[in-house]
Length: 325
Image 1 (cartoon, rainbow, N blue to C red):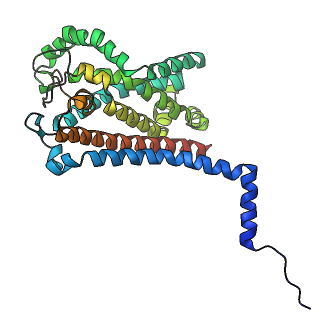
Image 2: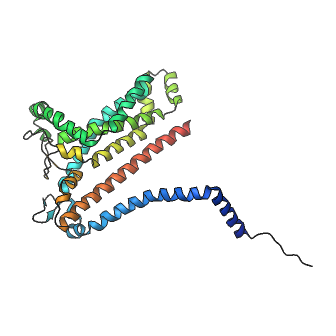
Image 3: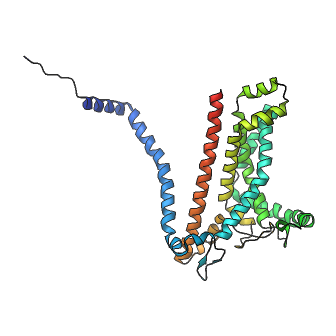
């Protein structure tokens, strides 16, 4: 007489296994943490969607000419983003020109040349500077930086380099130069901290090999360690650039808030973040409001792309060091 099999079906066994893991907590923890992780992506997509939807009127009215028009006149309903894009780029590039050499030099000293105790103390102070609110930097700029620029630095630059368009025109103290300097001070700690971490990721064997071949400590650092960590250093620069692009309060307090394009660094200007902060509550018409939101969409996308690129560079440097180890 034939016997029937009592073995459970594969699908039944999988269901029992799933229920067992669920009772043990593994599957529940996996599902909960997956939901938490997906919320990050969901929030980013929601932000892009909201900015895109609420800028529809501006995009329909101006199209791509919005990015190349210099007129920003709420009374006549003419809106162009070019002065704000120009101001954002000028102040951010100026901040990088000032902060990158200083930050890289400080990071090299802290990672390679400073005694361990001094390096730890200075690194702690750098991290504290990175946590200072931007409005504090703005107040510092108004009461300290702007008077120094107006009374000493800008007259000196005008008298010595006044033949260049960058250093011509009336001196106000506030303007592109003041905004670029305060941004440089703000992104300086980020560049130091991340560059230092990238330098510390370089395998010790790389340093020892250079020293064994007769290189000095500085030659080993500059010719071996720094090139090895260049991706991480570039990542710190991009993160600093993203911080400079999105900075609002400190820049708004010292840039002068003038929506015109001028070649002189002494002239007042405007940035995307500053115009949104200043005029959003005053936007009475739908087109005015949609134009400001479109500026926010542009700034959001630029910042996200730069941050993503910077993170990828830093991860590449870390994996490179781990592979060599």
